Structures are given as C-alpha cells and as structure tokens.
Length: 170
Length: 269
Image (cartoon, rainbow over all chains, first blue to last red; front, side, top):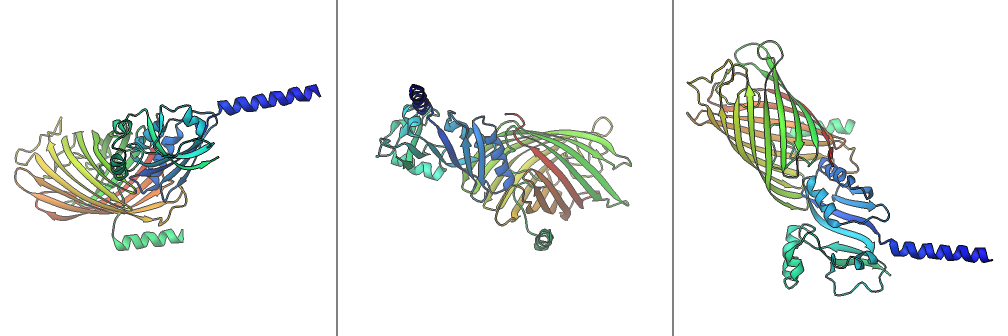
C-alpha cells in the first residue's frame, strides 16, 4: 500500500513538474506571399525544415499554407520562421501559432496581447502575430492606424511580438 | 501520361506562355538563399552563310548567397570552329533591391551585372557576352507576378571588348549596345495542386531586342518555350529562337535551346 502511495506521489510529482516545464508551441500556420509555383513552395519548405525544433511540415500548395509542427519542449521564436520564409525569397502574409498560454505568460515582455480579452482561464490559444513582416503590407497599413497609440507596436522591434487571440481552449 | 501529352500539345498550339523562370532572361526574383543550382544550357543555331548548325553548351553554377543576392558562373563551350572547345567563362550577379509581395502576387526590382571572357573569333555585329564576346553587361529588371501569370522586362547596357588573346574587336563595328527584353510566362498545369511531385508545365514567350549605340542597327528575336518542372526541384526547358526584325550582321540567329536545371535547396543552413 505504501509502495503504491509512493508511486502515485512520484507520478503526481512528475505530472506537475512536466506541466510546469512544458510550455509548448505546438504548431505554426504560415501563409507565404509572392508565389504560386510548387518549386517556390518547395524552397520555403526546405528552408523551414532546417529549423532544428521542427518535427514535420504539412503544405497546402494551393493556398501556400505551411503547417509547421514542433518537437516537444522547444522554444520557438516567430522571427526564425519569418527569416526562413524570407530566405526562400518570399514573405509571410499570415502567421498563427498554437501554444500553451503559459508560454505567453512566461514570456510576457516578448509577447504583447492586443486583445481586449485577456489570457485568464485559458489553457491553449491560437494567436496571430500582427507585427510588420508577419501580415501582408496592406493589412499592416490598417493595423498601423488601429494601433497608432501603442508605442511598442509602432517601434517595430524585432524582439517583441504583438498578437491577437484567434481561438482558445479552457 | 496521356493527359500530359494532350496538355503539352494544347499548350504548344496556343503558343502562349509560362511563369517566371524564363529560358533566356532572368526575373527580378532571386534564387533561394543557401541554395545551389546546376544548369546545362544547350543550343543549336542554324548557320546563315554556311551549311549546318553551331552547337553551344553552357554549364552554369548558381549560388544564392542571401535572400537578395546571387552569383552565377557560366562556361562557354562551342563547336563553331569544328571541334568542341571551351571559349570562355562569365560571372553574373543579381541584387533584388525592391520587393512588394501579396497573396499570390509580387512586384520586384533587381539590378544585375555580368563580366565575360571569350577567346573565339568575332564574326558578327550582334554583341552577346553570353558565349560570343568578352565584355560586360549592366542592367535593371522589373517583374510582376499575378497568380499564374508572370511578366518581366529588362533594360541593359552591354560593352564588348577584344576577344583576347587573338581577336581584336573590329574597329568598324559598334562596341556598345542597349538591350531590352520582355518576357511573359504562365503556369498551365496543374490547374490545382495535390503534391510536390506533380509535374508543372509553364509556357513562356520572350522578346529580345538589341540596338547598337554607335549606328542604331537593331535586332528583335522571339523565343517561345515550354518548361517542365519535375518534383518541384528540376526543370527542363525547350525553346525556339526566331529573328523577327534585323538590320545588323548576324551569322546564326535562329535555333533551339534545350536546358536542364537541378536545384539543391538549403545546402548551407
């Protein structure tokens, strides 16, 4: 009985520990702009594959959407994804990330929430990055007006990311 | 396969065009950073004043240094004087300095330069630093892609030098030329993508013009072509070049091209 109790305690401890350690980015959905041919798309895919934390990539060639799945326990910075798409000769038209809310809260200086609703009571979220270079030029021009009073947005540091929540799970 | 042949036939009969990876001209887009591509351009042009064809072979190596800058080296091998000999080599660089991209479209501007060495005899008024003349070329390119259609245009200045060591540039001929090109390409197949292994078929048409600055003598050629992209990694071009207008002395203006190209993506991380 004692043994079982011990085991359960250890299991709970592992579970809690793993829960606190894993603040995971699961997936990035990237729409690339400026291309229609499959050779161009292949160039982007091959670039994204060079990122060590990438586990697999699914592509929709008709919409140029790249669903990038990540290995466990890896820190992902959106700028590395953007850099790879641009290396292939193209640009990011949209980038959405599926991740644990704890990933955002533990990196709150880096990730700035532009929603009126906050992250409370949410476990995983899908966010869209709103910074210049992560949306189409036309969209950026609109957002620039919308966030005219947000000084960090206008600064366009490469190191911080402004996002809005697209979807969430409690 | 049957479908493919049908489509090729249709494409050829329409005599329309392909996307951006043109046969003779370069688009303003760059090659992917850290990629290496090898290409073998082959051409057979009919001699105007003697019997037979002259065969040119141009092996090329292209390197994308970063997203905006690429380098290419080309060797010129030909049998114009009987046997196959290496006549020269060139270095080419292209810098994409402007890019405005949107969903399935872009507008891009690039500047390019080429320096070539050639030791063959100078046998025509046309200046061609790709395989005939020593000299250089400097120019600008603008390319617009809208969905499956690409349109590209360029203007350049070309200066011929002596083909050292044996052949001086004839003093009676103009050494400088202005070149202008207009290219249009369209992705014909597939209509809808299912995977990277699908063969893409592009149809293209390129117009190549040259005017000698000294005397205004000019030429204008048309190059229709069909291009197959295999496995999203290799390409085969089949093209025909035909002189449309000409007031300069040229020895072999009409002929065919068959090119093979293979790209190694992300060779360097």
